[in-house]
Image 1: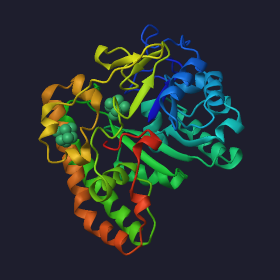
Image 2: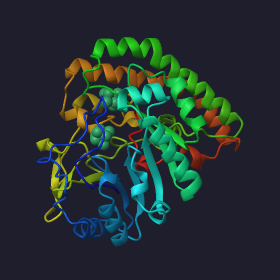
Image 3: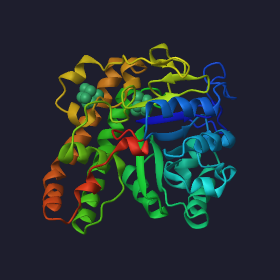
Length: 356
Ligand code: SF4
Ligand code: SF4
């Protein structure tokens, strides 16, 4: 199981697509749930947990991280951070992480436009520090928000070139005012989907040389097409993953701190399941690959039905573009050029959502 542990509701940045901190009443900036209690709750339910620190910005509360890590010696650890405060955690703790997600959108002009001036330099410094000075053997993933200024091919190739082990992205859709469904679809047709196809060609060209590029949406989709399908949203929300909020509530999804449907329980009481996807997923021909994409959007329809369908349209096209290359990858797997393990991607180990 994947467990997100929120260490604070506060964030030191206010990125354009997010806005920054959660409100104190929804996710207390100083946790009311003690780290020991949180660790005990996880340990009582899971003998081999995957624990990801989350926020707000989790590194605003490094002590909390240290205490949870101390109490959960057998867990696999990861963190989703904006990368600006990495030196707050001692190097010996960084060496215990398996996965580190640093938020960065691409080149400096794109990242700093959306995240704030100077953020790009800090994230790149964090990457170099973790790799060269800390000697962290963790997988460092660039976590992109893809928006109207993104040029997908350019930005993913750029980030891989910077030394990230992998790149994951999410589309800035549904809960954004940057654009609406029609404008998003136009951009997807003109820029995004052609770039998905170019990136697929690069991915396959490298695979022919026996090198599997860390393009996480591709790994996650090819896993479903060629190795094992998804039976639920790939992020696991509400079934295979839960978040523990700083007030002790257990949530189906780590961003849903204020939405009533998202409370699954409390660390002092337990967990009740009970979330479901929209009916249209049940009859969708891509359900086994998409899994329903994002549970949150099944409940919070900010863009309405039209917006949900626009995102589905892009999801289906993305899957189709990758499907076109699937026979080549299958052949490479059969021939032993690419190992099955390299394609059998498990998003729950990295806390990635797979479907952009
Ligand atoms: S593409 Fe849309 S309808 Fe199909 S499974 Fe994904 S979210 Fe559901
Ligand atoms: S993909 Fe959606 S449901 Fe899953 S963790 Fe992210 S916001 Fe929550």
